[in-house]
Image 1 (cartoon, rainbow over the protein chains, first blue to last red):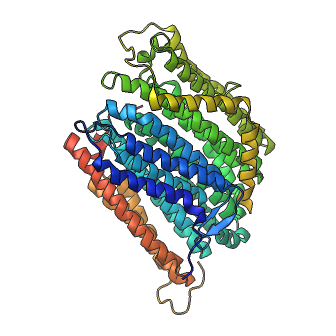
Image 2: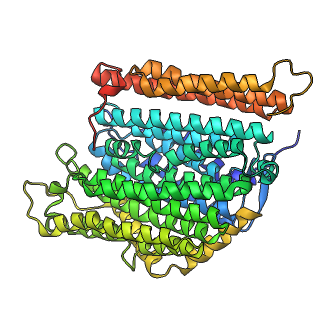
Image 3: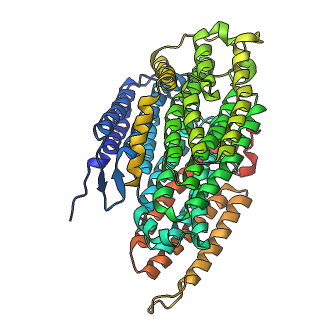
Length: 491
Length: 108
């Protein structure tokens, strides 16, 4: 028997060892009552695992290895996403203890589940075979369902998990049916082999139907309208750090899988799937922005805003297929990196506020009033992240939107870029409204924070804020990294 | 799906029809039924419809990739059922019901 080349999966193996170590060490830690206690040890293991995975991934830059009979590859494309996921999960873990401690549910499984989800996300980006894509997606999804249900004594957390589970499994079943039809058409599950067989007979109805079903399943995962119904409920009900993680990790993983699978496996139908994603992107941008306008709950508003951002990202994916050009795809990668930091930061500030008053704070706009006086740091940081989400120049959000929309214009779809820019102007209303409440409205009740931002939460927010500003002010290094990572997809 | 291998007694189209019918029944069940257990059964139906497809195509193409895939799908289906039932237990403890349309606290 031939031993497969294990080098491409070393980052995942490190995470696997760390996750198992977390589960093994946790029972030996002292507890101070149910769900409380010093969990520094397991947190340290989890963070060390993520750091190890990140360092090894960076050490593997420039390699091109195909392993497990062509099921997965290690190239700069996969490395880019592995690094992004490790950073996103690390920031999530740093902001979690304060929140979990406040809700008396500080358990080691939480960290293990995040690590398992990251393994799934890493493999989704590296997958070059539909079997591995499905397995990796389910590893990520099943860990996510459990994370959503983590506060199992709270009705809202349960409801959130139920909705996530039912819609998620429904979507993956549809995607799986599509994959079975792809296999039926081509007799292969490997992206490259599928691409070679289907490349010639691009436009046949059966192929397009299969492609449509696969696209539908993945569109659920990126919460593209009209498959977005679960997003607001899940984000609102899930623990806030978990919602932060959902909004960046699984979404970016699904985008990486969409781009890799569709570019490599369905080259004969690029026009058709490009058009499909363009239509989805327009609907998604409209639905996300319009519904976000009427929200009074900031967490729910951020959920709709994440739908809107999925729409901006999909314009890039669609333009990439429609024009057969890699430029919009590079913009999507850069946007995903920018979005990871700014969205994690925004949810992180909400997690901090909730952890200060776990019983009374409900993320509503009214309760944000007067925050600028009672907790200036939280207010300033949240303002920075919201301005970045709006796309104000000098922040990461502007750079992300600039590159995605200029890619779309480059692809000859200037009207699509105009729709995107107009709708992101609409988004300024609901982002700036939060800032106005924080700085210019008198608080109605006593919502002052108890402790200043400190510890892991401070580190997480600081890293997010600094990264948001750095990407916003000097984006060229990231653009170069994205460019060299993207072309490896076509090798 | 034109020709079939000579030794394939049942044409591959028939597997496709059966699988499509099962998949539609499962999808309709997931969308319409209110009881969480029936919804979970419907999910299994959808996944098994896919399995029939994969096995049929595997025979048609005379390669084993499809049958390998089925083993993975069955393992994932078991994991999904375990998580689904765990969520059902937690839900029942909090609300004493498993009718999915009653879980509507978050709206808008």
